[in-house]
Amino acid sequence: MKRSFKLVFGGLVLLFSLTSLIVSAAPGARQETTPKQDIKDAGKSTKRAVKKTGSATKKESKKIVNKSAQKTKEGANKVEEKTEPKQ
Image (tube, rainbow, N blue to C red; front, side, top):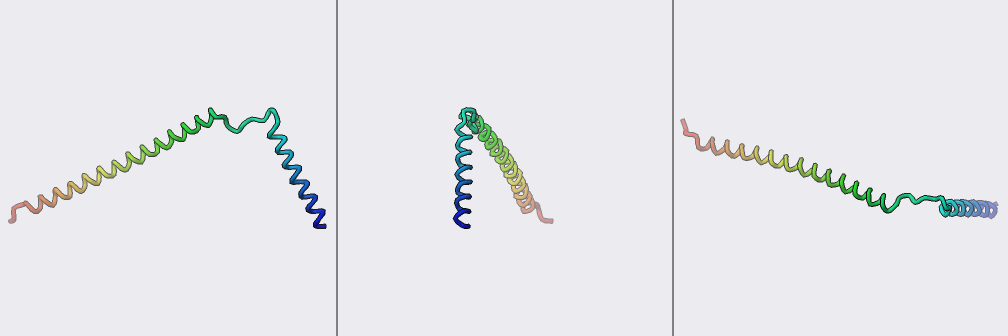
C-alpha cells in the first residue's frame, strides 16, 4: 500500500514538473517583466522614496523651527521677568 502510494505520488510530482516545464518553454510564453519595465519600476520606486523623505524632512524641520521659537520666547520671558524693576 505504501509503495503504491509513493509511486503514484512520485508520478504526479513528475507530471506536474514536466507540465510546468513545457508551459514555461512554450514559444508564446512571455517574460514576467522586461528590462525596460524593471528600469521604469525602479525609477518610480525612487521617486516615491524621495517624496516620502522630502515630506518627512519638511515636517521635522517645521517641528524644530517651531520648538526653537517657543524656547526662544520662553527664554526671553525669563530674562524680562528677571530684569523688571522690583516694586
